Each structure stands twice: as structure tokens, then as C-alpha cells.
Image (cartoon, rainbow, N blue to C red; front, side, top):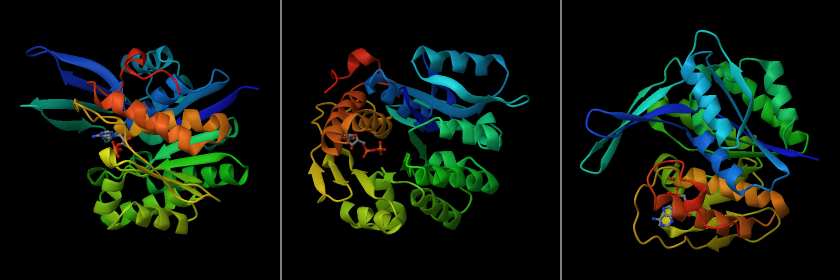
Length: 306
Ligand code: ADP
């Protein structure tokens, strides 16, 4: 029987500086990047699907075509008339990157607006991944609709995975941001935060504090990523474990380090539930990704499957 991993969120059109005066077009977004890396590492009997919403315009069609070309299924991406995908531009100034966004009316904001569609997609999946960015782009009602479906999925025995991915610029209100992140974590049985973000916004002193906080919210399992400092895992019924990061000689571009870690971890973890082996494979993949430019590095640049 085919199994399915479903990633829920927003993929955007990316424009980056190419030659003088020219822009190169790509497609990226945390939850899509995670699906991309999951597809590269997942067993053949697993489908990896994306759930989002796009328009009926040309660029939406191109985005779907791109996703399919990577092996990520798009059957659960809604088509919404009158909307278009969000867009962002990467500016490079002496090696420093900054971003401009046009996403406030993006189609993806409506990803949870059709309850029948949302339920059907989740019911046909075994592992469901979403992030704090997914929640940040939704209205309060849509957040509630999505979280209640995910709660239902968890009760039905599915694996619900949440990366808080805290991005203050996406939220209008800090209290709403922290409350919504907590609500997201509370429906998940696996939370995969980055320690930097958690320390900044929740004041955690160390990864153990992050783990304790998410366990108190009801997550059985927590994987704390902490850049070059390594990974701390806490899985139900087992003592916490530490895994060193893979050494990177030259950091080229850290975009998507966390996303490639998440995708590779999940693809490996679903095979046999060995979280330690999954984190080791994920750390190796993330190290390769930060040694290359761009969010989506080609399969050839990644280590062979562990
Ligand atoms: P995010 O990109 O979400 O902020 P992190 O910075 O914690 O997440 O990175 C995610 C993973 O990428 C880490 O758990 C680690 O395995 C790897 N990683 C990130 N930065 C480095 C680095 N400088 N050296 C080695 N591995 C790294």
C-alpha cells in the first residue's frame, strides 16, 4: 500500500539577481522545500504531496509543473480564480542577502478555505507537516480550521509534524504569534524547532528548555536543531540524545538548512522510526545544502542515502 507524506503551506515565486539587470525565476517556500528534500530521500512506496492554493494563471501553472518535475505530487493544490502566487525578490549587496515580499494577497492564504478538500487530503495521508509560516499567512478562522483537522488526524493515529519557524515580520502582533505557535505545537506529536528562534522569542536558555516547553504543550517527540552546535532529540520513552552537526568547511548559503533537515529526517524516520539514524542522515543532507547556493540543491549535491 502506498503511504503518503503531506506538506501544507505556501510556495512562492522567487526572483534572484542574475546578470546585470536580469532576474532568474525559481520557486521556494519552507514547506515546499521540506517536501522537495523528503521526496529525494523517501522510500519509493511513499508519495510526497503538497497542499496549498495557487491561481489559474500562467505562473501558477508553471509552479505546479515545477513541483511535479521534482516528484512532489500537486493533486491537493487548490486552484483559486482571481488569485496568484506570492512573490519575493532576493537582493544581494556585497554578499549580504535581503528580501522584498509581495505575498499579502497570495492564493496560498486560501489553502484551508475548503473544508471538504482539507479533510480529504489529510485523511489520505500518514504524515502531515506544517509550519509557523503556514499559520502566519492564514486568517484566524483558517488557522482554527486547519488545526482542528490536524487534531483529528493525530487522534486517528497519524503523525503530525510542526516546525515553529518563527518569522516575526509575518505577524502583526507578538502575542498572537506566540499563542498561535503554541497552538500549532499543541496539535503535533513531533515538533522540530530551531533553537535560535526559540531562544529569541520564548527565552529558552538551552535546547533542554525548548524540549521541556514543547513536551508540556503535549508533543511526544521533539527535535531541536541548533545550527553548527548539533541536534538534541527527545523521543517518547527514551532518554534525550545529542547528535553532532556534520562539519562544513565553507558555508556558502544557509537558506533551507532547516527545511532540508526536516525533509530528510521525516523521509528516513518513516522507514523504521529510528530517530537517531534519521537525524544523522538529516544533518549530513543539511551540511551539503549549506555548502551550495539556493534553497533547492540538486540530488547530485547531496550525500547518498544513509
Ligand atoms: P534553520 O535553518 O531552520 O535556522 P538551523 O540553523 O538550526 O536551522 O540548521 C538546521 C540544521 O542544519 C542543523 O540542525 C544542522 O544539522 C545543519 N547546520 C546548520 N548550520 C550548520 C553549520 N554551520 N555547520 C554544520 N551544520 C549546520
